[in-house]
Each structure stands twice: as structure tokens, then as C-alpha cells.
Image (cartoon, rainbow, N blue to C red; front, side):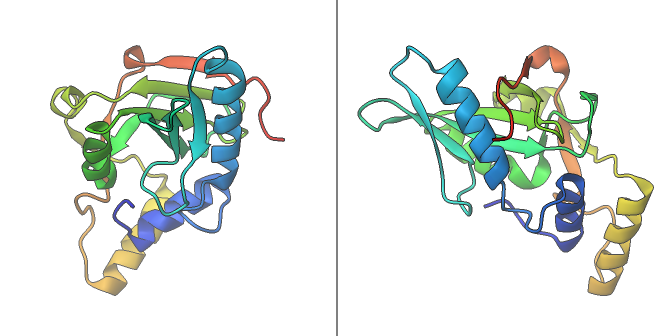
Length: 183
């Protein structure tokens, strides 16, 4: 599981309208369906959801159950496909992404709010070197809420790793329309 922070939890749940920063159930269902019915068709692989507290949202396995890849899903609060600052590796997730990338390829997926379009790329540890940490661009309202929460806790803003991410340029990945979307 990624490192938890109350301010970041507010930001992530507000963006997608969720109640729990670790509950990506809706996103998992949509992307699992997308992989199994549109991407992995006619291959020996299937996508399956992991437990909601597992650091990776989905695993891709062969017919023998061997894991070949992991899928990490992020849903942003954008209605349109405004991806300039969406694709990234969050500073608080770097440790997990590196760990699971040793077991199988980590595929990072960024879904827009209505879950009809996504951007994905295959993580490469070189991304961490090529795209150094940058401060997350919070909206003024969310930034204010995070600062208020940190002040209550006697913590600074910005604080590593919570307020930083490695921004990944769109040239590193692919945009796709989701074939079905929400069921």
C-alpha cells in the first residue's frame, strides 16, 4: 500500500468522488473489463483484481497463474482528456512500483473522471532518473485543505514524498478510448 496522508486522501477522494483513497473498485472493474475483452483477447493472459489493500490494482497472469504484469490505476478529476499533468509516478508510490516491477512489468494507467478515456505507459525505472520529482499541481482549494491538515499535525507543506511526483510526458505512453466504460 502507498504511504498515507490525510491531505492527499482528501485530494484523491474529492477528485473522483470516492469515500476511501484506497478503494478503486469502480476503476478496477472498468479496466479489468477493458483488458480482458479488448486488449488481452486471443492471448493466454487474463487480468484479475487484487485485494483493495494490495499496492497494485490488477495482476495479469497466464493460464498457469504466473504473474506477468501488474496494473496500477489512477483516476483523475478531469472530465476531458487533459493529460498534461496526469501521467506520473507519485512520490509516495515509487517504492511499491519499483518492488513490483521486479516481479512483472508495471503498467501505469490514468483514467479520466467519466472513465471513457485513459492513458497508459509501461513503467521503466529510468523514468525516475529521466523525469525528476516535481511538486504536484494542486488546485487552490485542495492545496488550502492540505496545508490546513498539515498545520494541525505540525507538518510542513510541501512534504516529501506526499506532495511530489515524477511527471511522465505523453510521448512515453498511449491514449485509448474505453470500449464499454461503466457497467
